[in-house]
Length: 513
Image 1 (tube, rainbow, N blue to C red):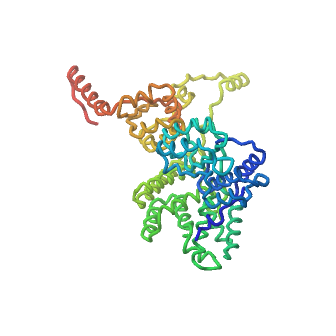
Image 2: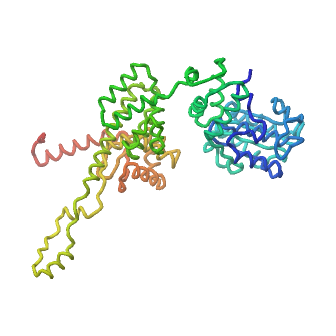
Image 3: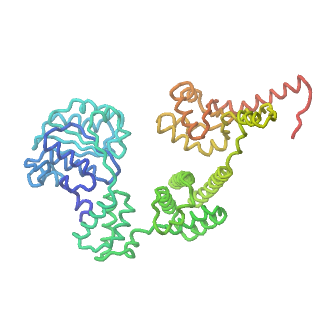
């Protein structure tokens, strides 16, 4: 028995949910005959990329196409629907990563004319999995394809596709399906299956699927497998666990009230009750998302004014970091306790900053020109005091101090910021570490000299790294220097040798303070 996603897979462009900006363009290209030879479909998983590719392939070969749509009645359309059309070749790039397979399946095969239709269509799914040599083998074919050959590439990570390939394709970006159209699609499927599904259940499915049609249809299929014609929230909870919004709200409330010890006790209690912590972190992020968007649900509106946007931003970063740790195998209890401690420290810092802001700066002294004018009117002399060194310093732009602990705490975020601008540098930074901070100079310990030279001797690379560091660490004058691994230990030895030489030359003893 086919699944719902297979049974109700769209067969014409008009049936594809929520991708009208793509399907309408493809339909008009078929209708007018203004076709390209290579297409790149990108977007999240389960939103219709492969489905649209199959419909497009049918429309290109349909014998009685109607208004750009496949008829689904001619021999070629029927063969394509049944998966036996020889002129539509669908490949999974994840299992064809080797260059030999690509050369055999496409490069050599494309030379032969279509068997039944007038066009030969290749659909390559998850193309970002192809190796560099496979792309090189495919490039020439994409540059000069036969007149009858068409290529449809689908991927969830188009940024991993080489630029030389992307530039030769028409790229269509598929988006996540909005809640309204997705709920309407689920309602139609449930009606055709004879199920009476409550709107609350449909809303829960849509929320859990996060805009993915395939996930939503899979959840609906699981509910239908229970054998109930009427499905309410009580029945749905057997398959779809409810959100732990109440527990997440209580934990957020303790954080807002700066009750660090109570929050740790709450986490221990939830752990003892067997509550899964990874879904709990997802629910905490769900709350943060709605609070940042100022669209909270009724059950947690009380949190709306208890966190500033900056606090919510820091809270989200901490939760994302601990979520990655949990997926990497870190003990969930320790990860959430660490998140709570980090959040408590961050909220305390923000509170101190707000207190400083409320107190305000010291009142500015009366300008000398105003005092002189008043003295002329009153006839009293004015004593002009010399400027103090501290005043001169305060008039300058204050330099933000940087400490090594802050750098180490934000080191992972710094690497991610660099990765957004250059993909090769993060590898070096991941195996390096911050060694010391003196003033506005950050010293990084590299394992190899060529790592240091790649980052610091190359002007472009140095500019990227220092720009990311200045922005993240809020230190506009920050400068980065580098040492090699052995130099870190030798640096302390040289310092001790220097002290010993001075004592020998001038005499004296080291006094411990």
